[in-house]
Image: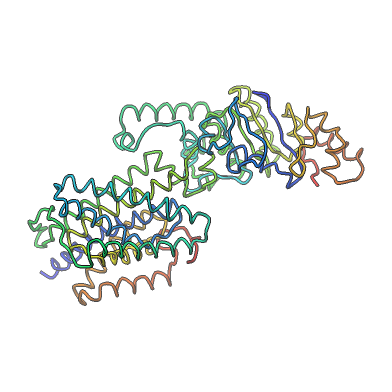
Length: 292
Length: 251
């Protein structure tokens, strides 16, 4: 009995962890291409959820139309942010562009509160609601399906990065910008595309997170755990984001059950302090990451 | 520059040789003057576009994509000539497959065999010896199907044997592909042996140009290199350097 309970808690953690991993992937994408530590990743996720909310609940579009529309708007939003806020910061110190994303996060929260108020809202139901049983362990259907959506998207993104030349071009840009430029890679376009892709990926995570726990102007807090995830895994490591996401998910789930929900974030940040003391560049990250 | 020729750009350190390269490949915009390539003014043309037009370069300090294999590095050279989109690559459509196979064949048969780097093509570039990394950089530039190849110090820091290999490759590249070569080099033996044409820069000004022998004899060039001193002695050292293929003294 006890074994099944533990299994159930870990499964719930893995489920949330999948979403952390997905959002972590979006973060790493931006960091790899543009070397910007994007603190606003949680707020970008929130924007995706609210745009979906506007399409599905506000305009009453069917779900199958509202999701792609929300992702397209998220991607366009990512491109806009890159072009207007991030591109002018090219060549500035890392701490400056970091601060810009801090500001961006606040602006986005303000924007959401202006348009939709600070009240919590519910997203239209679109995931199946039947409980999933694995052995004797029950898994919440939303977390179960959310996890598989995350897995599917992560695999797709990884395949594209491995096999499409645009993905290889991104890795090349991350490695050496001047050389990338000289072999004919359009570096500004890589910047743009990486922000668009990251915003769309964060949008998917936002829609799923929102449909699990509702949306509010405070849901950007999700981004704090994601930050721990990527620091745990290494800012520039895709593998690190995946492993870190699942790990942090499990830690939070265990803490939530045994110590109480209010201690979840505490556990996450204790983890952060431990990582920073032992391996400041993360589990899989490049060692020479700038100090912020 | 004559199509199909080898031109060397020489001059003392800080003369502006690499700046000329950066201007040619579009990293710097010229304050004055124009760059005309195949009858087309390159003003305002972004570096990736220039690469597609047939300008390829290597770097003085090796600029390979670390963390990738030799083969991936070379294949990236073809980036601007490929068309497959993300969906085509994801589902590996027939068009994507054809493009990939064509690319593989050309790179394997023409470039890798030619540069004798077959044994390292799956190796990560960071693990290679310096001379081999330089060779991979040349391979990547060749994969761009260049019409004009810009080589920034192709043999800097190489030993005799590696230098001779590189010199042989440069001559063969020109013969087989008909590529025009512009190189910056301090190894006077190599410059004098390979070049059809030599241009000497000092403080951003062209102080001499012509066939290698003419440039070698130009008193202004000798002064630029040495500042002042015994012209006859330096000339003698140049000549011996050219004969032995050794590095000539650089002030």
